[in-house]
Image (cartoon, rainbow, N blue to C red):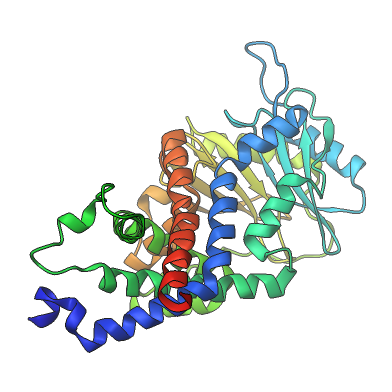
Length: 373
């Protein structure tokens, strides 16, 4: 009962305090950087729209329908003859244009098409202040090595969260007071209470960001670890019947979309994913509400043979059996970027992300006073 009543007197708490203290100094600069860039990237879509308005917003008369997908594909093939189309996203409420990803060698191109004519408007610049901000947050401007460092540092933040939870516990009789800050106390005591109160109030969210940061850096090992505890459902897409000759052409996609609407009446087209191999199918994703809002429960995916156009399989997300492990993997990404509850959550997440810089600064000052003075 000594830890519950007087945790400061226990050896385990003192040992974890040292782990927390020195790990915090090691990752303080990282926490400062990752919090500031993460808060800014909560509004990446808004920044892209502001910087590249013509790619996102197109004037269109009321009642006009989207350009046939065959026209869009033909225009893309004419504009990018040496590129392979990976997928095409239909216009949404946030983006009024077609969005297409194309690949040439190792180079990825993001192109936009007019929703009415189907003509290519242009491609997103490969370098901008937004991409620099993304690369700084994702890879620390160091490519693959930076991503590894990011993952290791995120693991350190995970250690900080868990040890911080133990260190914060003040005892049964004082835990309520530890949830707030007494601003009348000396400044060094205010820093201590502020550090603890912010950490405990945002513990779950900080823990989520640390765990998902590890996942983004090491997706394979992370999935295997989750599967060992919470088994994941393994599914594979149906295959096209390989044959000699070309796959379906641009003109055939309009027919596939019409077939998809007959199969799923009342749903809106969301995305077309092109086959990635000679056996892969063409995937058409439809949504009864919205596609691309991270809520896939209203979506239906249709798989078509890439040669004949025959329907191979239909999968309704609402009918899919989801395991606990599947739910963890499905929600990690949306929760990390705050795409789960509209702009209100975005604002809350952006403010909460500033906890990392706050904890880094207050922790460094406390370390300075404790160790160097």
